[in-house]
Image 1 (cartoon, chains in turn yellow, orange):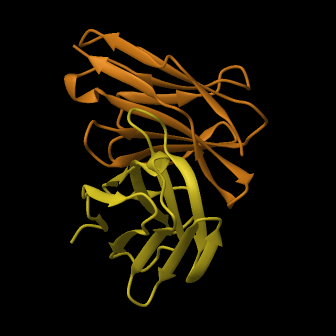
Image 2: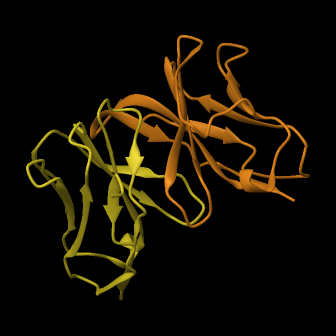
Length: 110
Length: 115
């Protein structure tokens, strides 16, 4: 079983739709959970950061962590064409040695 | 949000040559990391560096690789005797306090092509 699993997509949605992304993981030691956005040949840009279980909201973005199910989610409301990118989940037991998912490529159609 | 500048943005090198990738954090940081992303694959942890020492390294980070902070500012990754499979994006990262908490922030990356 892979340590972090993420459906690579691609995912295509119309402008204004809710984008729903998720990852599952196997390592119960993971305590820190992040979502990054990455454009082609650019560095990952931090979107959301959550410690342990729970929900976190920041503008149009909501991150959810369910440690009992080893499942994390990212929701993007009112999606815009500028949200088109690859979204990476990442997680860690110690907030620096991150294990990444494969990334989901999202296209928001105008 | 902390900023990290990486140079070069793109380097093409011949197989067997040595390459040095550089990272310059804008403000003072103690923790540095290198990650790599082979085209089409996951971002992978290479090494963490704290207080001028390697604190942890992955299986990928073998004797071919080394890191140092020679002048107290730049943080470098040296790859000796490059191989074709070293072609990848290399990201420097720092730990910093930002809008989303104290976590890892990545530079724009150095794209290495070994021919």
